[in-house]
Image (cartoon, rainbow, N blue to C red; front, side, top):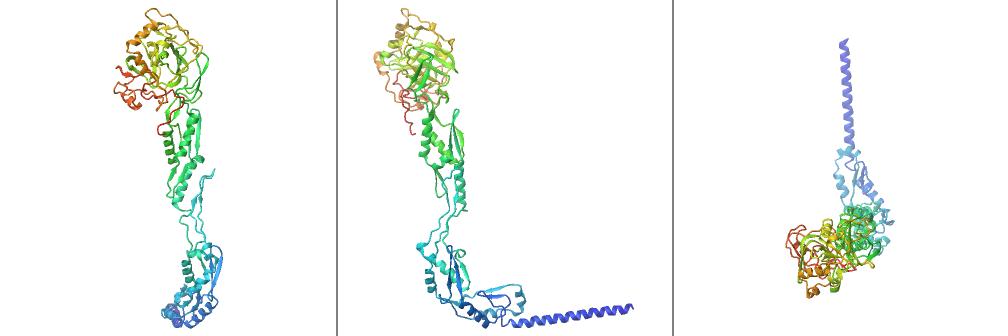
Length: 605
């Protein structure tokens, strides 16, 4: 039984195998038979010049192509619309060669099955003929081919400043300018392929903008300009501020084609000039409430804030070019004590030339007051009114003019070489001494007073000189009785002890003392004040001390040179300073004509 079952199973396998072999033989015979057909016709899914020729022989293909050409038109799509051109108007026809036969001969009929899964497209331009001149004439009739109507493309660009937005990119404009030769070439290719339509945009025959909205350089320039437009420069003037915003800054900018940005320096300078006009206080009249309760207007002198317009213009220009805003103070040629209220603040020397009396207030408190002797009016050396900064202070100087040399221990110039100093050759101060036996313009002080002021004053401190009617005093004060302490009221002048000079003292003795240092009538004439035209440089307000070097300061030298030659503040030597007369040169860092009512032009600003 088991043996029979094995025989039956084997027979079934043989039968299945035999059937499979027979099927394969049949399929192979069928495939080979079909392959013979493709010796004379084109493979499946074959297209020639947009015509499906699958299964057609060469003769049948030519017939089909001829029928297709008979009604051929090509639709032309432009940027402004559509037009069409027909094969008939351009003399389109077929001139067959052996191209179709060559394609047919190149087919391997036994590979026909592979073409059931893929398309085969064949373009034969050599068979299609047309009259190119007729095509040109036909195209010339279309409005979009009229060069006079064509619009050039416009490059993308950056807009002007838009308030609240900044700058934007204005996209390029495509225009309608065509290249006629490129149009003919593209249309000819389409006709030879019997394509039903052609897009001139896709064919790339339009002139293109060189710079598009995606241009990397343009985008970078946009970002840079918007950085400028968004920046803010804040100027601080004490509690006040001036804000320079992008809406104003952008008016000063010019962007070149290469992307670089330049700043209109003239516009920047004009802005800085406006700041100076608003916040400068040097050379401006100052209303001053005196220690006597009266208000005087001081119209002369250079004390106050003064912006260096040249340096600040250069600094602001660089800040703008950096694209980084900041808060800042302007660069000053000269500083003062305060931006609020009175620019001289609460620390200043008050000099009443009429009363021949001064007060030194420090931080609002009266530190010292004293009589003094000012410039000799009978010889034309009267000390001028005005508000001035202490230029510097110096120990152990020799005040020298033509024919005299006066050693002093405490030298504090404020108006060119007019300054405060000790005068140990005098023992009487105040009253009317100055009218006939005054100095060459300096404020002569008792030594103890000069020492006290010197030890408590810094360069840049305001010295306010004025005349006030009704405060003149006929009596004088001896050195021993000079009041060196604040008055009980803190503001009102303390009563100085007035005495009448004894024989051999007072004015007569003082006159002898000055004569002893070499002053003569002819010397005094040389030292008389000259017209004052304003400083060529103003002190900075910092405690500028002379640097080490020669102890001789010579008239006519520049401030920088004088600073090089001046002695240090605490020098124990006795430097020589040409002092007292308005005609003398200034000390280190001080102005050369500070009683002018108008500020001088900045050199180069």
